Length: 144
Image (cartoon, rainbow, N blue to C red; front, side):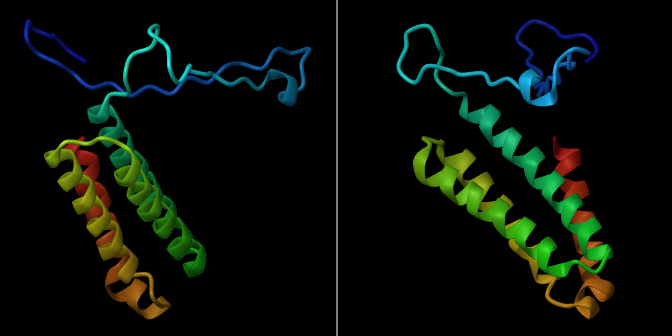
């Protein structure tokens, strides 16, 4: 992260993977983390973090779609992008984003629709879809 100065913030998204004990099965080692919905002990969901997580997930979905389409699995690639578009729409419908966050997520949906258009056929993917997927994914990754 480098130096963090007063009044400065840095965003860090983490993913924690727990080791499976040698004497346990994978099913026995699975775990869930629960947050009480209405408790004074928990803080309200941070919409800024939700927006950044959706951006990271959208970028991952674009990479997965590109890999699928490169392997001639265009239907799966389309489904992957469409699922992310719908997930963002669902979040916009139920969460309390401010104007800028809502606008950003709407633009992210537009990016996803834009790359989805390049997955219509093998020819469109070959001619411009793969380049579009790579460019839009890279743009979102770099903005993070």
